[in-house]
Image 1: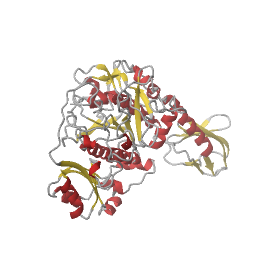
Image 2: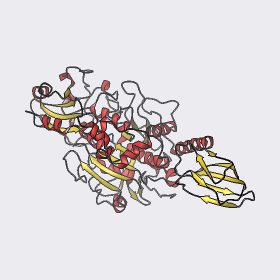
Image 3: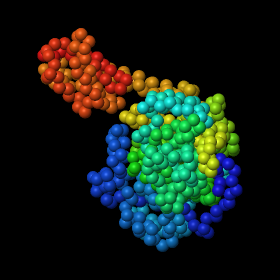
Image 4: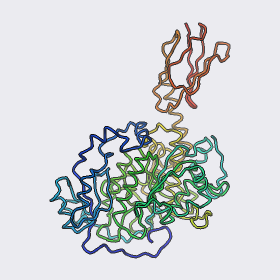
Amino acid sequence: MKKLLLVFAFFISLPFFGQEDAWVHLQDKPNSDTYLATPLTMLSQRALERRARQNISVDMKDVPLDAGYYAQIKNANGITVLAKSKWLNAIHVQGTQADINNLQSIFSFVAQIEFADTTLNTTNKSAQRSSHSKNKNKFAAMKTSYNYGTTSAQVTMLNADFLHQEGYTGAGMLIAVIDAGFPNVDELLAFQKLRDDDQILGGYDFVNRSTNFYTGNNHGTNVLSDIAGYIEGVFIGTAPDASFYLFISEDVANEVPLEESLWVEAAERADSLGVDVINTSLGYTTFDNANYNHSYADMDGETTFISRGAEIGASRGMMLVNAAGNSGSSSWKYMGAPADAAGVFTVGAVDAQEDIASFSSFGPTADNRIKPDVLAHGENVFVIDHLTGVPKPSNGTSFSSPVMSGVVACFWQAFPNLTSAEVRQRIRASADRYNNPDEQYGYGVPDFKSAYETVLSIDKENFMNTTTIFPNPVNNVFTIKTNDNNSTGLSIKIYNLFGSKVSEKVNLKSNTIEVSGLNAGIYILKVINGASQKTFKLVKN
C-alpha cells in the first residue's frame, strides 16, 4: 500500500506490455427522450427533491449510457472495459493503442478517444508531464450538548458545537464518503450508534465490484470517524446524526487512471441516491506509469477526468467537499484533482492554534482561482483507530476534510432551501481571511456561528420585506403571501385588542386562513416563520 498518511512499503505495478488506458467518448444517448420523460428510472425521489429545491432540471447528463453502445465496445477485439460514466458519456477501456484507436474507425457512435497518456492524443492541451516525485500522501490525508472529549478542538474551532446546541447535528442529511475502505466500521464501538440507528444506508466497493464495503484500507474508517464517530465523553464527530453511504473507489495497491473513473462512478451513484454531501479525502497527481502523471497546468478544474466529473456532480446540487492534499512541503506543493474543480469545496489543514499545517497543499489553480476554499483542523487531529477503536492523533487534509463535511451537513440542515452554491459562499464569507485570501490559507477558517446568524438575519429581513396579507379588511378568508425562500412552515397567532389570543394555527399546510368565526373588529395578527415574525393589524368585517 502506498500514498497513505503513514509511510507504507509500496511497489510499482507495471502495466501490461503495450496496454494503454483511455476513455471512449460517445456521440449521443439514443433513448434519452424515454429516460427524460420518466426521471424516476434514473434518479431516486430524494435526488429529484434535492434538484427541485435548487431549481436544477434533469438533463441529458443524467441519462444512462446506451446499453447497445456499451455492449459493442465491450465485445470489440482487444478491448477490456473497466468503468463507465453517464455524466461524461464515456467508457474507460484498456487495450493497445491500435485497438483503441480502431474503435473510432469501426463505430460511428464513438465521438472521441482520450488516452490517459496525453502524448497519444491527436489533440491535447499539453503533452508535457510533471516530473515531480510520487506523492506518498495521496489521501488528501432538539438542542444537543455534547461532551466531545478528544474531538473538542476540531469541533469548536469551527463553532460546530454552536450548531449542535441549536439542534443541528446532521439528522436528515445524507453524506457519501468515497475512500479506500471501511474495515471494522461494522464492529467498532465508535460506530455502534450508526449501526443501531440504521444510519448506514448502504455502500459499494467499486474497485472489486463487491457489495462488501467493510473491507479495504483503514483510511476510510479514520475519515468516517471524524464525521460520524460517537463515544460520549470520548469522541464525537461533527455530524453524528447524519446518514451515510460508504463507497470504495481507491485501489491502494495500484496507482492507475481507473481510480478517477471509479470515483466518478461512485459520485454518480451518490447523486442518484439523493446524497447531499460527498466527502473525498483523495487526490490524484501521479501514477505508477509516469506517462499518465498530471502536470500543474492540468490543475485547472477542466482537464482531468475526475475533475470534470466532480464539476458535473456539483452542478447536480450536491456539496462536494475534498481534501486539498498533503504536498505543501514537497517540490510539488499544489492540490491534486479533483480539489482543483471550481464546484468542489476544497479544505486545507491547520493545527489547533489555527496556524497552517506545513503539509497542507497550495493553490491557486492553474487558471488562478483561490484554492483551498477553507481550512479546518488537520494537524494532530483525532481519529478512531480501526484496530483498537480508541482515539488517536493523526495528520492530513484527509481529516480536515471530513471534519468540515460534517459541519457543512449540519449547516445545510439548518437552512435546507439554500442552494449548494449558496452554502459554499456563506461558509467562505464567514472565514477569517475572506477579505484577504492567499495561496495556502485560501479564505481561512470558517465560523459557522457567524454564517448561521448571517443567514438567519438575511432570512428575517427577507421575511419582513416580502410577507403580506390580503384582503385586509377581510370577510371570511385571507391569504398570506411571502417570497421568503427559506419558509419551511408558517404559523399564525391572532390577538384581540385586549391582548388575549383568540386563534392559533401552527405549521400551516395552506397559506389561506379561515377567520369566519371571529367577530367583526380589529385584531393583531402575528405571522411566524422560525425565528422570524411579522405583525399586522387585521380588520375583520
